[in-house]
Length: 135
Image (cartoon, rainbow, N blue to C red):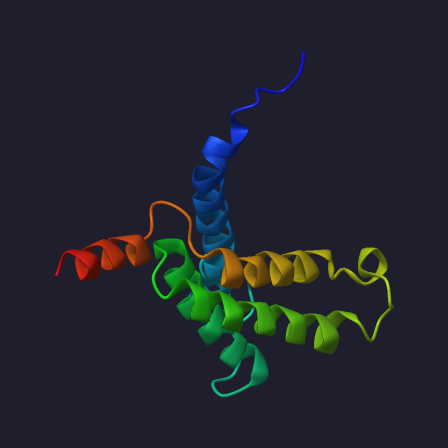
């Protein structure tokens, strides 16, 4: 049975869901580091690289989940994930499947895509654009 031909109509919905889920997953990394939830057992020292990463994850994860300032937040999150990959994973092996960096690479490219695609549906950016367009 072939796929329906009108799936293009659902692309903005799928984009919005992808942004929300990626934002929530990034947010969970930040809350785990900085707030201990979900329990990560890792509490970095204030000002350290992991602490700074946790702050960026918390901020960008929140913004991406809400779809607010999506493009700049996605750009910063993409860079964070690339940095995390090359600092934490790449020295162990060139191959992500061997160095445990699969998630960092995937997040990097999902966030990079969001820089160009924008937030999709269900975003505060869309609400802001409608309000600015009406005023």
